Amino acid sequence: GQQLNQSPQSMFIQEGEDVSMNCTSSSIFNTWLWYKQEPGEGPVLLIALYKAGELTSNGRLTAQFGITRKDSFLNISASIPSDVGIYFCAGQLSFGNTPLVFGKGTRLSVIA
Amino acid sequence: SAVISQKPSRDICQRGTSLTIQCQVDSQVTMMFWYRQQPGQSLTLIATANQGSEATYESGFVIDKFPISRPNLTFSTLTVSNMSPEDSSIYLCSARQGGGYEQYFGPGTRLTVT
Image (spheres, each protein chain N blue to C red):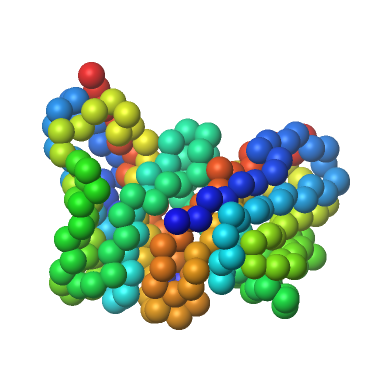
């Protein structure tokens, strides 16, 4: 099946640093979504992207839908300890009733 | 947005028994899904729960093992049948309005099979 290549797999950063993670695919996606999951919780939707080139912010988070429609990135600025968690990218291949394809996740650790 | 609740939040079950997980959405949604997730791993889609018809299962998942019901646009159940320790996992319910819409997740059901 389709796969999303998400990198890096894990990150250890100092509080206050900026973070960048990305997802790439060999297929064209019509929708990109970014989720954060904390231990013992379900994934929480952070940002949804629907147009190639779209740049969307949610507080300290910024995500972009790649112009080729085969990639997306998520940036977190001025990281804080509560940013700790696993971040997943997900894409939808078409606007029909197709399931999301998920990346393997980026585990973020923030050192105070 | 949609708020999704699941019951039970966790359970410990004996091998050979079955467990039914309930999922309730606070608004009518077109699509509901069931995922499985091993701790620290990505999400694996089990099936799409179709309202009024049989669920659509992904490769590797079968109706006899994971029967799903969806009687209306806000509720679905997943049953894990004849459980074995390999079924120990987190089961997540998810929902969205349709293609090109935001998809939301419930808090998950943590299942341990002994």
